[in-house]
Length: 160
Image 1 (cartoon, rainbow, N blue to C red):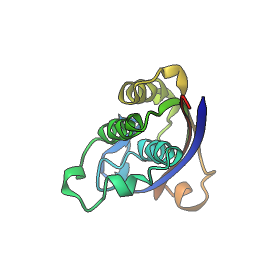
Image 2 (spheres, rainbow, N blue to C red; image 1 turned 135 degrees about the horizontal axis):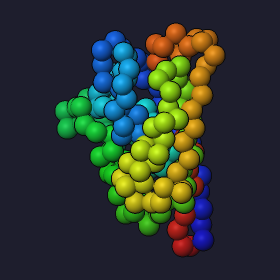
Image 3 (cartoon, helix red, strand yellow; image 1 turned 60 degrees about the vertical axis):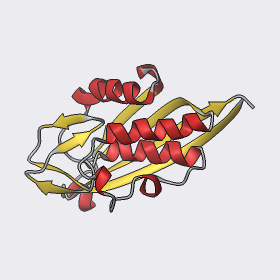
């Protein structure tokens, strides 16, 4: 068995009265993430981790923010497309571990739904997806609720 590990990072600006989607879940909050797609910072970090592990470049290479096909699209579709790219190279996902960093809203109540969405899009078990969240202790752009950050690591595997 050959295994590889990937790391992903993403950041999005927060804007007043904008939708806030994380892990495929619409969150109630006075601010939301801004971007070309639905700006789902968690799914973008996961896509980058998966693509990086398979040496398939990054999310911006495959889903350019200048391409109108991806404007406003659900990042769950981007994750599905990422998994297709891995499958074409005979990779399968072992696990995903992700961390969100934001001041508000509280993420813990939404983690099970996020895991379900990600598991469905990636074709893996909820038990293979870990999502955690922390604040930035009110410091920096995260602490001022100007942005949200996500980190992800993954393991992919295939028969040699």
